[in-house]
Length: 127
Image 1 (cartoon, rainbow, N blue to C red):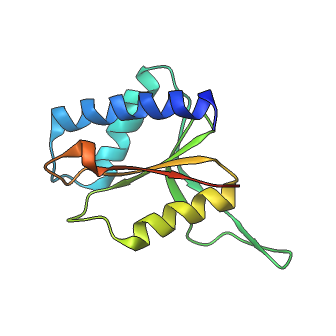
Image 2 (image 1 turned 90 degrees about the vertical axis):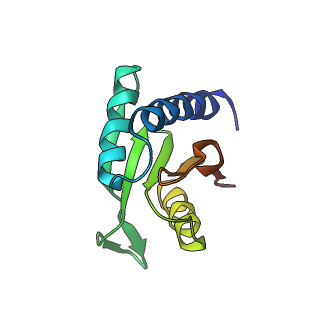
């Protein structure tokens, strides 16, 4: 993976730290998503939120229920969580979003933690 995704990932991490240091843990995912998107836009990134992801199966387009939280610069997917702990299903969800969109990099972030550094998980799609 080359520079654009890595640079974007670094910027996202910086925005996550800023949001976490200001708000702390314990809020709803939707709050963290909105504030994180705001911080990234302030930093000059192009942000799309709550993007529907269609699934193509056997020539049929299914547009049910798949929504990624934040897409940064049309390259990096960010999934925001506020849960007791990340479970395997959260990793599978982001991995599936990466495959369905053809994106290379995703970040899974759990804001409901005492240590935000350890709660940012990087997932690479091995296209």
